[in-house]
Image (cartoon, rainbow, N blue to C red; front, top):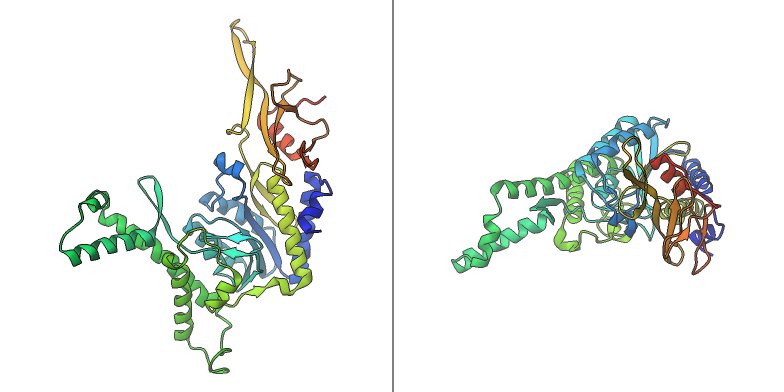
Length: 406
């Protein structure tokens, strides 16, 4: 049986999941002999995406990252990274914070670290992945007229228009509205965004990843590696990762073997069974945390953590209302009687609508089940137990009221 399904069959409570997560983090730290920190975002949950959970890297992440790193000692650290990407300058800032505190920084990618996450990974002294891991193209994104575009694709598109116009001696009228909406500043911003990503990756590879690369191991074996050769190899890798034309999609998964083909040395943690087991178990427990709670970001160490949790008033947790007597004015007022909660079974995907009454039990709304008295919801389809204790606790914290149970 797989690790994930074995944990699901144990019907773990939210507290059990956190405890087991911490145990696996401590285990990874012990095996590696290094401090360990996790930055993880839930960017695969469609429900959280629909509700607008801010899962990408942003400037608000800097404080919790710094806070959690202050809890760690030693001069070397492993960072478990799970992110869709986000702000490139925030990625740069976090790497600088890591480098100020630790002499050696390595990145473990159990799942996906895309875009700006890939930039961070390229700053590591060591990169650890297995066949399931993926980074992504460092495809600088720019916003134009409310839409996001690949900076490289925009620049190449304009270049093609210019080349066609020069070749034919005329400008296709269809291009005029596009060109009218673009200023030289827009094009320069796109070029700057693209260059920023390339320069970061190139410089970090030279400074950190290649710092102990002193002799050639594949050709001219034993000969000294020059600074010029390191720079050329780093530039080659940076150009390749930033080449939108090569990968075509911003969401493309670049695997361990792809990075090795580019000439980047990556450690396959699957070749170390105990480490691979600990990382796989942590990844499964992390996924369970995201699936069974409103948490969308986790910053954690083996002993401490900061969670970012969705606001319960966002769409998806829909209040149903009741009229109550207004105080002092004799007019009816309205307050939330409870919440309609959409719950998806992590095993079979069955959708269930729960009614969480606040303060006291109310008439059951059509199509709803009551919030379970023991915080455990048996899936109506596959009978998998979905623990809801953390969800209830967060709902009570957000509203300042108690969820009523029979």
